[in-house]
Amino acid sequence: MMKNKLYWKIWNWYHYKSPIFINTLNIFAPIRTWWKARKYFRFPSIKFKYGKAGEVASSIWHGSVNCATWFDLKFCDVFWKWKFDDSVFEAEPCINLILFNRWQFLWVFGCPKVSYNENNYMYWEALLDYVYDYYNIYITKEQFGWVSYITNEYGNEDKVTCWTDEWLTKKGKEKVKYESDKYNKYSI
Image (cartoon, rainbow, N blue to C red; front, side, top):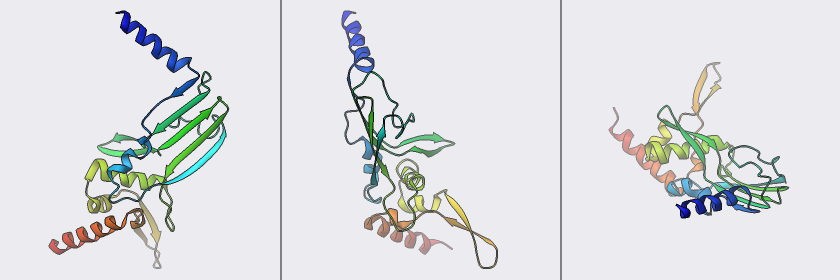
């Protein structure tokens, strides 16, 4: 009984009164989900933000400012949830550092730099679809849900997917081409 009481006293001190707080010691957490799809998806680009604590990213995703800490370090994987039997993107992975409850440094892992489309939502939605829903890159591409409409020269709206093959590695592009040839060969 005494051992359990001591544990909770230490836990309470560490989480609420300790001047140093490290939330997650796993430094690979920001790339954990990407690591599962690394054969086919390019590495996310890293963006750096800094400023006063709480103004850079004061959301529940990137951590709030704790008044008792001098040093706060968090490693976060991509935030997502299950909704209607589908994985839905919430927020991008990050590394968050708060010093002396004054300065906040945030490294955000976003969409890889591609020629025209740098939308974090679509990149992470596609990656989550591959990892948690389909685990086949061709089916992920075909079933990708983000759609936009473009007016053609006749005034009609054409349905266009927001998927881009530039998110993929060379091996991923080859796999999509191979799978598409395989599926189209047997289709009527």
